[in-house]
Length: 477
Image (cartoon, rainbow, N blue to C red; front, side):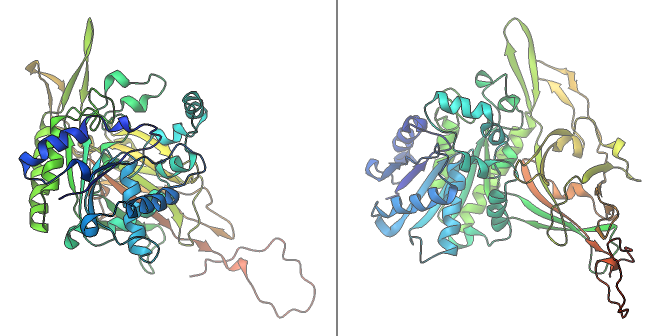
C-alpha cells in the first residue's frame, strides 16, 4: 500500500489548490496497478504567507507532521507543486546532514509538479510594493523569507542545487525524483502589469529550465599558475532526473493548471512514476520522457486566438537559464563588473545572434549574481518554423549557429593596491557546451585577485617615514 502525501506551493491558503488531482489518482491508480487507498492520501497545509517563516522552519514542521502519520513501513511517496518541491528537497538534505535531528522516514518517490527548483522570476516582484498590496488585499503577508529563497540566484537555492549537482545519484539508493511541468502560460491568467506571467519558456510562474533538475555547475577560473587574463572552464553535470513536459499545461488554474485541472497527461505521468521500482525502470522512464519531450519540441508553434484580430504567434523554442556569480579568488563579490558575451572567431560581441537574450535579473540581496534567460535554439541554430495553418508559409526562417561562444569579464577596478584584470575564456572553450535545452546552469566566474607589493613592506630605516600614499609596486605572485 502506497502512502501519498501532497505538498502545495507558496502563499496557498486553502486545500482547494489540489483541485481534482487526488480524486483522479485514486480513481485510476488501481487500473494502473498502484495500490493507493483513500486512507493513505494526505493533503498538507503549511504556512508560507507569514513573513517570519523561513524555509528551514517549514522543513522542520514538515518533518514533525510526518512523524504523526505513523507510516506503514516508515516510507511514503510525495507529490509536490511549485515551492513544495524545494521544501521536500530541503528536507531530504536535512535528513542526510542532520540524521539525529530529523526522522528516518524514507521517501521513495518525489514527484514534483512545476517545481521552483531554481526559483522564479516572479519572486522578486512578490517582494516588492505590488506583492505586499496584493497580499494585504488577501488578508495575509507575502511571505518574504520564503520569497528570499525563491528569488532567482538566491544563495539558499544555489546551495541546494549545487549539493544536488555534485551529489550521488538518488536512484542508486532506490529513491526516485521526477519533474513534471507545463510548457506554456495560461493566457487567460496573463497579468498586464507583469509580463513574466505570459513568458514563453515558462508555465506562467516557473520557467521550464528552472524546474528541471538536469543541471550543470560550470566554473571559469585561472588555471594553476596560469595567465590571470585567461579563464579555464570546468563543468560538472547533475545526476540524471526524469523530466517531462506536460503539453498545454500551465502553472495553476482550473482550466490548464498542471495540478488543479488534473489533466489526463499529468495523471498518466504520475502513475507511470509511481510504478517505478528499481534503477533500471527509472532509466527506462527517463528515456521515454526524453523521447516524448522531443516530440513536443518538434511541434513548437502555438497560435493564440485574439478574437477578431490576427492570431498571436508563439514559437516554443527550448530555453536555457544561466545563473552567473561573479567573485574573485578571495571569495569577494565583483560589484560593477561587466560580463560580455561574444560569438564567432575572432570573438565579437556584435556577432551574438539576434533574439538570443530574453531576460536578465540580478538578485536583490546579492547584486553580483545575475540570472540570464537565453533562447537555446537561436544559439544552437534555429530550425525553420512553419505556419501550422499553411506549411508553405514561413513564420521564422532557419538560422545558423554563431558559435563558438566566449565571454570577457571587465572588472570596474583595474588598478590599486588590490585590484582585478580583464579576463576572457580560453580559446579552446565554447560556452555553448555548458547550456542545455530546458535546463539551468550555475556559472561561477572567479577572477584572480591581484595584490600589490605596496600592501605590506618592511624597512630598516628607524627614521619616521610617511607611507600614507604608498607605491603600489609589482603584483605578488
